[in-house]
Image 1 (tube, helix red, strand yellow):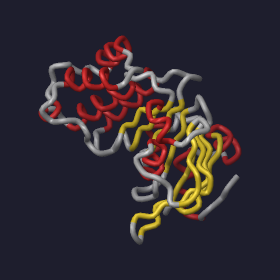
Image 2: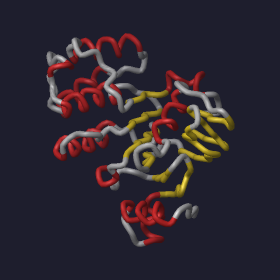
Image 3: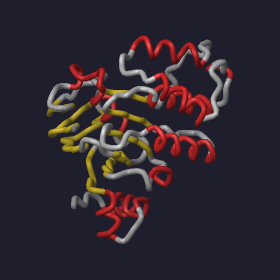
Length: 234
């Protein structure tokens, strides 16, 4: 379980998070939804221990994130792979660095995503790079998977392939997956729980299916209503 307790974070004069309380249940797929600049990436970086809260507390399995880094597989929005690497080199680096690397899982997802190990990272399309980054994260057996804007700037068909790979790679009950995105349509059917955030404040968080039943709306419709009308905790 991951918990945020009254967490605030500033970057200079910018308030990234303002007194945030969040609960990410163990073994669930959580959608972290909001517009660009809402605070989604800040939440991800606090969970990984890259950043630290100015106020409040972040807990991963009851401990500070810094002590739990090996439990977290993180896909940042920025392109972090060396452009001169072949995909096979990136995989060897990951397998040496992370003891939870699963080689058979890597091979299976490599085929599923139709990627070639001899691809040079800097010479493939943006969509292929997005799939390569996802492959390397999903090939770990980490209890926590953090995916920051995995659909950003890529075409519709590639987004569908990535969504399918998330289903293929997820170990239900064993892993907690947090998907940060404003492309809600792509993950509407995947998520168990949703957190809507805007301007550093949580507007709504709840079980996804319960929300749909109570409001008789899709998650996209709910998000539009919540952001239009302000905080509506349920």
